[in-house]
Length: 135
Image 1: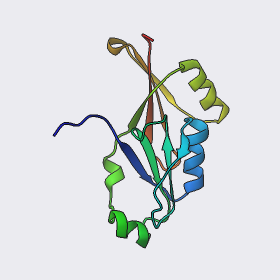
Image 2: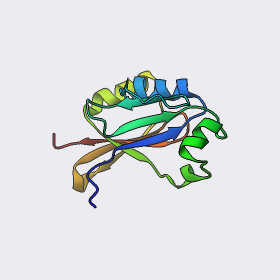
Image 3: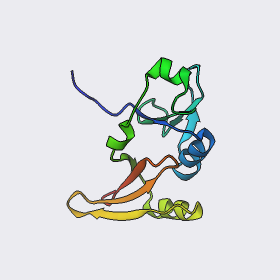
Image 4: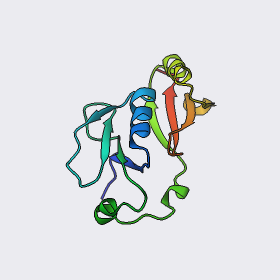
């Protein structure tokens, strides 16, 4: 077995509309095809491939349809440090975050030639945007 790339990450959200707005309006992902699961949700894409997507899972933590399909989760998010996206156009990203009133922290990784922005989604999931300074 060899891992080739990140397929997706899923967020169980209690406010599907707010989470979707964040990933679409703030991060610029777009809603795309999603199988007809028996619970609310939304799949968000960065491009045309099905990899690197964000799967939003709606409903309360004890939602029976979600639990039947995915199982019950307890405390898993506490172990997740952050999710990172490769991004472009550092100035435009900062302007977009400011326009949406999103607080963030900036970092620079000199050895790797990267700039980073750290922010948090509506469900408290830390998100990193990484920008190459070499491009």
